[in-house]
Length: 205
Image (cartoon, rainbow, N blue to C red; front, side, top):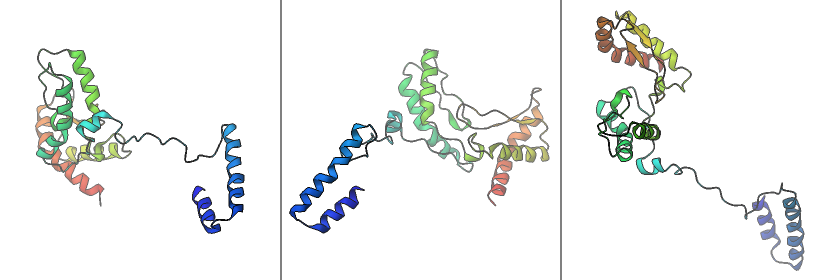
């Protein structure tokens, strides 16, 4: 609306009557402003940018999205911002990098457990996001996980189940069951990567 007014003023190009038009046009916004529902003008305050509002993102960078086909080195690099954050916020503890399994990195020596838990919760914001196929926010994640379980059953893994999402929002698959069946654990570890890969390729076709 401001742009439209500006164009009409430029086209009229300098008559004394223009002053009267400007005065007449300026009156309505003032009245509507008094009622609390005025039209936004150039004097309206500019909102504070939110992109860099989180100081953790500014210091450690935005979290990345893990991929199912990431190498071990790539996945380790993705966890480094969280590892640095934990080291900075738990100086009295010997931090253990989380690695690719999503485990907590708060185990240490001689530190305050409450401080470690607080740092763990804080630094989760810069932890990498889970692969979309296993992200609890993905409505198809459970279907994908079940297809991996079915693949593992086909390969002889008896005790295998889908677990609840971990603290990072990743749905995981556990082997062994309540009986801690060693055969299921070894077969599951042996075949899970190939099952994940085959089901991932099938879901993209």
